[in-house]
Length: 350
Image (cartoon, rainbow, N blue to C red):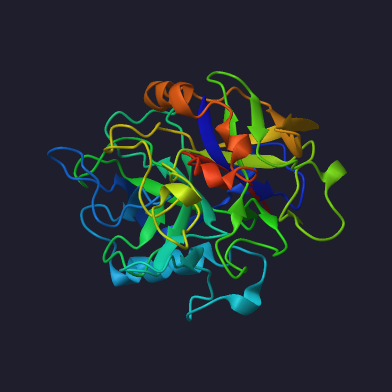
């Protein structure tokens, strides 16, 4: 069983093909997707955090200042609110700054509204054919990661050297990608403390995802704590392996960031599941009531239009210690049960 964080992709008009959502090519930029780890032993480098496993480079070196400016302009806003855009490029960084009171805090983390991009292999790459396919990534900007600022939540291959990776074009979207959460605020990062994320688990090679709250629009509360964004049939969802953290009580601090700042169950860069940047369509949502120690808790399960992946390493770990503990996270915090390892995300495309 794998644990995920959900990002929902909000689609603002109808299209026949998912590729049509990513129709704008950044003409002035050619990139490579690099895993941020050491070449010799695949150990993670210092800038790696949950949802920040790699970065975009240029063709033969770090992105130049001109390429960075062009990419920022091409990405534009990520949250459908141009009033909070920054810099002369008029764009969003897709970052949230969170603090846990420890040394080195605060931290730049993947935000409520990361960018979604599609990278498409360049025709001059070795082995390129008309069947070579593009991949999707959730992207955000970390000012503290010098020459590696454009961070990707998910990786395709364990290419940690620029010379190993293939050149790709970048395609962007006018849609929005929103990280799902639950509370009285409207998005993660707006509360007085860390926001509660919507997480889920699924068994390998299935299309049924259980979530820790009832995420259905049908049962969305009208006031008080509720989903930042609810889910209904037809919604588009990103399910990515970002080596998501161990949960509030797994971070080892008194005022923890959800998931902590260390990757969880990802000892090195060989362990994340590759090519998880797929966009799934919700085909059914059902609420479910469970009772744990006489406490009623509402969760939901979401059916997707495709089967999810299998991760041998983390699948084994979850069978040992995470099977149904996700549902206890909010109810039994005193047990200090860690959340785990991947997130689900809601999305909106134009």
